[in-house]
Image (cartoon, rainbow, N blue to C red; front, side, top):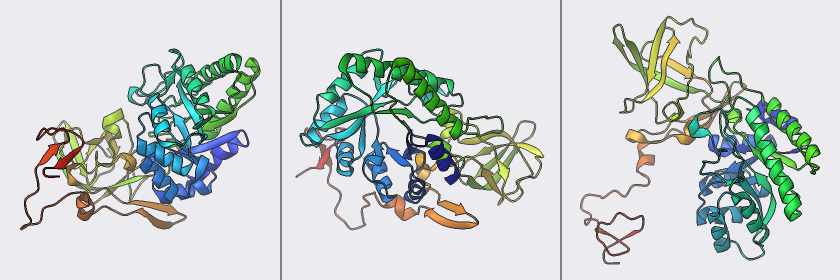
Amino acid sequence: MCARCREYREAMGDAGEVLYSAKAFASPGFLRVVAAEGLGVDVVSAGELGLARAGGYRGESIHFLGNNKSLEDVAAAWEARATLVVDGFHDFDLVRQVLPAGAGLRCLVRISPGVRPDTHEQIATGQLDSKFGFPIASGAAREAVERVLAEDRLRLAGIHCHIGSQILDLAPYRRAMAAMLDFAAALRRDLGLVVERLGAGGGLGIAYTRQDRPPSPGQFVAALRETLERGCRERGLRVPALVVEPGRSIAGPAGVALYTVGSIKEIPGLRRYVAVDGGMGDNIRPKLYGARYEALLASAPAAPPTQTVTIVGKYCESTDVLIADVPLPELRPGDVICLPAAGAYCLSMASNYNGVPRPAAVMVREGRARLLRRRETLQDLLAAEVVEVPGDPPALPMVAVDGSEGAQTGLQRPLGE
């Protein structure tokens, strides 16, 4: 992890800023290490912002993104003096409700460059048909910039885009950069605006299997810098500061998931199921994106495979399959198997489905282990529940604020209030 942070930072040099994308994995202990390596952070909720601040982040080094911010989100961004990434016109309404006149909070405008990378359709975000950003093609991006310039609660620092995740080809980034620079040139021509910062997003893929061949962080940043500098020369633009926001490519290779084998089910001539003590509750990616992992026996990682098995979880869903048809050595109940490249978008997307507590997270460095997050307990599962104690008076029935008993609204109060 530290080596990758340094590779990003060294490749960027003084040309801009590297932000870690906290949605990949946001334990404060992990974020403290990332911050110590000189990276900023981007967050997408007041909760992630709180985790980032607990990890030592302050001020404009925090970038607050998100397509449907709440009043709480904008208030948290303002209180932290984070850089706000304006993603939709609704953000302007929130800003006017939360920020005082003349606040001048630094912001970027997220644009949709109309570029679709070669990745799973559910993690492509830069095309025209996307919930994220202001499309250039429709004129919305230009309108958003003009609104920021007219709003003294905000101070425009630049433009931003993000085209997707788990991208293994640098060509889409070059196309997105060209679209952003064309837009920047139009802003200078029509509005006299000089773009100071250009956010190129993150999304660099990692190797989940031996067949994957992702670019390195250094190659990624070098390609963006070369494209940016050449594109500015061709358009007669001043080169803005470049901002990138890797997440997966930092946290992903740093983490492994360890599972204990439980039941083994043999269906002669068809399949051998190996069930483990986790599954879709701690790694939903195989079902969301068709993600593919490899596995090894933790006690003998170099042992040659002798069988093909399907690793499944303990959750009550037929789709709870971690890896189908993976070669492994002979396994027995109690063996520990390891899934490499599990540091990103596993624990951060974990759930308590079936009432299963989420697992612990441990950081290991030079043979020394440190607990980042303890394993959850039943008490944690009950912490947010309102549990009636025998002998207590029955709970009051609920009525919607419009007076219609039993209405399913998000805002309810007990009868009699």
